[in-house]
Image (cartoon, rainbow, N blue to C red; front, side, top):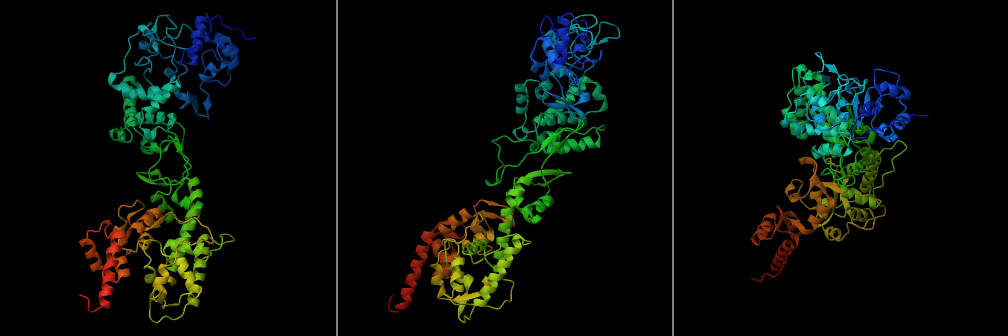
Length: 618
């Protein structure tokens, strides 16, 4: 049966378990802590490892002190792996917890703080987060001084030798100018969860997702970077270094510019600090409200990296992989994958490699997105093989004129699409006849205006024999579609065809088109990029991708000068001059407001035809 003390331990928020036991022994006239702890698994008379030892009888000690078991457990520093302990949620190196010497704050004791704060047991902090003065460990009651221990009980606020109040010792205050910055570290290490959150709130929003352990380690190593060996033993100098380190984090990412590497800083510490500081915004789980602009809605949320403490410098553990590894995982070309990252189709994670940042990919995103990319890439390859825009190949697949086999059995997606495109090409060549007086099919179908060209419906008519066509010799690298010629009277049939008939096969179409395909839909020349001015796009200057919905909307309300010239029979210069003379508005340079432009152009064309048919008319 466990014997209980007469006076229960005084529970104070933030008090260490060592201090709690020490004060309880004094309050109950137990002269040595070993007198109590030997009953609860602590065999060492001169080491009070009540906060660290795995052999402690937690239930028995809690019962003896008349406090809840949870209060004992919450104040312990359990081992994390072989080299660290959990200090209220921060993983610190085992050697950084002071368990032999009782450090104290004269200012805190003088102000009435008579318990022993847990933060005084962190060797990394030379100052008190309670009294805001330098921590001390010696009473001057003897010529050589008496270093305070945890063995002989006299209360944590008193010298264990003379019994005098340690609050009477002269305090060395923290300079007022350092307190605002040091508040960051004081709150991060505070046992109170509310204070911990307040510490995180002092950081810029982008790095608040980083763990307290990472922030703590980075502060300590930043201080090591800018300090010299002589500063380590000098409490005031080390406190100033910690303040500068905290300030660098509060001002992230600009704060690193104020960090100067000291002559005593090891290269490995400097490299670790530089890299970790640079990627701090990617080292934690972002807030729910945080969303990277430009990230596509279909992109799944990426898994964020975590921090794995290791010695004084941990590592940021991440599931991210390189572009090469992502290409192998997704079965897609590495350059295509990098381009998709540049276009914002992947969450744009970054790795720091030396002084450079390189693309990093979340495997979960790669697995989720690359199947669709493989399909779209294969369709695009088939479209280019035939000489069509991407949407033309999609129409053919929906109409079951282009029927790629399902991947499997050694057949890959790209191979299946190119094989189907080759088969369709041969079918078209076999069905072609002679057209002596004709025009290129691609020129004829460009008379379709304000919408995508009805390639599937048109090729269906050609293959069904409903429209005569021939093919020119294959003297260029153009696809088979570019070699087709039709009679000039086929234009009226082509313009009447629907571009969106009821599909026989249902597929997920691309949501973006290249600039070339977008201009094709607008009936603009390949070089007329100004027609796309003002539209949202992704990608580099030469490989921009535009939303299909935006292109269709622009095609419906705008018409190009060359389109009007082609359909009216008037010259481009004449059409442009007339539209400008009548102040027809332009949606983009060279793209006129469709309704007004067509009314004006075709009204004149009709009058011109009437005038030519009646020579007597003025």
